[in-house]
Image (cartoon, rainbow, N blue to C red):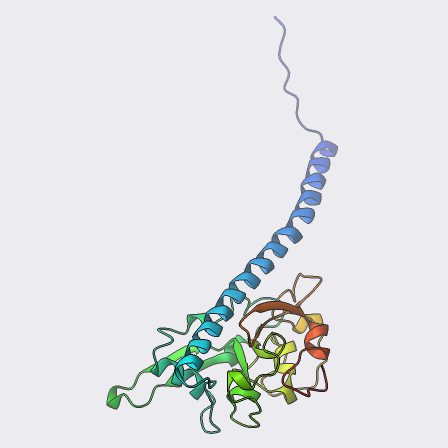
Length: 239
């Protein structure tokens, strides 16, 4: 009788298989990471479009005015929209890319907001404020465009977007182009390098942030555009 012999893989063959698997993984992982970044951008755009629509509805009902913040309460522009019934919750204010990339300062954007005018049982709302509105519209200071009708170029002027704070002033626009970090709110010492972007900072070749314009359309803008070409109001020197 002929005896059947079992053939085992040699060490060389096993190493070749492992090497092939490693090569395939190295090719697939960046693609998967890129797909996650793209998916977060889409979700972020959807969030911002919901906020834009709500703010436009507010303008329609309040003589074309933008909601306003105050010096004593920078969240008042959001509170006024909640009181008027434009937001049932604030989930749309949290960017799905908050924890993307090497810098995570999302704790700095945790906001506890107490709603006044509701008696002793006033509600305290906690949310992540991933997006900031243009201070030249919402204040609290230096308002140049108080109403939708006073915005000269709605399709090109910054409305709100990924930001380190829920008020985004033109004099500190690092809050937008450094929307993912690395420094706490108010620090303005860093150039717009890709590792500071909200989207794509960890994996993308074109990192940046999602911006919404006054006409309601949203777009992904890279770091260089946000620093140099993003207009904030009429006569902006960066335009």
